[in-house]
Amino acid sequence: MPSLRLAGNTAILDLGESENRQGVGWIQRVNDLLDEALAGPATALVTTGSGKFYSNGLDVLEADGPIELDPEYVRLLQELYRRLLVLPMPTVAAVNGHAFGGGALLAMAHDYRVMRTERGFFCFPEVNIGIAFTPGMAALVQAKLTAAQARDAMLTAQHFGGEQAVEAGLVDDAVASEQLLERAVELASANLPRHPRTLGTVKEIMYADAVTALALPHRPAGVLDEARAGHSS
Image (cartoon, rainbow, N blue to C red; front, side, top):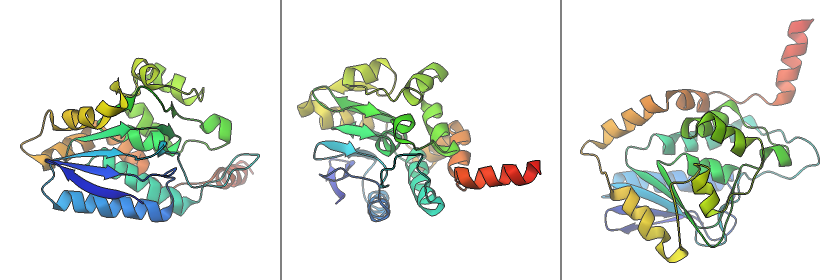
């Protein structure tokens, strides 16, 4: 279960010690802890996990074919990604282990990302597991990467280790596990704003396309196909 602690002026939000899949209860717990962090003395936020995974992604059942995501579930997911994207304090993902699919998206919503060098992969496996990016999810990734970097990450399902992820532009640094939190806190506290609300506004402006796309209602592919068929007839 996610938990929160304070390290100096930095709030450390531990995503949990299991796979940290992003189920509805997990999302609500993380939102509650973000409320707590914003209401307290913290001036920066670091998220991390305490087990093998940073987050193993969405809480959906595996299937042989394409997976249709529930619109309400997508709304909750994207609200969390959007909230982190524009949070009015510096944010760093300390990627302690595997960050797959939704876990990688969660990390991308932070200002900075640090991975450990010894273990863990950063991966967008969508094309191999039958889950299509929503426009909001795609816009989130594209807001943080160049067009070529986004292509290579989103279309290949490549597993990036720490140093590979740095080279691919997915993360800002890769360090040994014992240095991970220290490096993340260092990044988070390096440039603290005098006006946090303005920081949040600047993020909203910087990432306007992603912010807008993440607020769009999700229309499953089947619904889109029916709409297209009706339009063509």
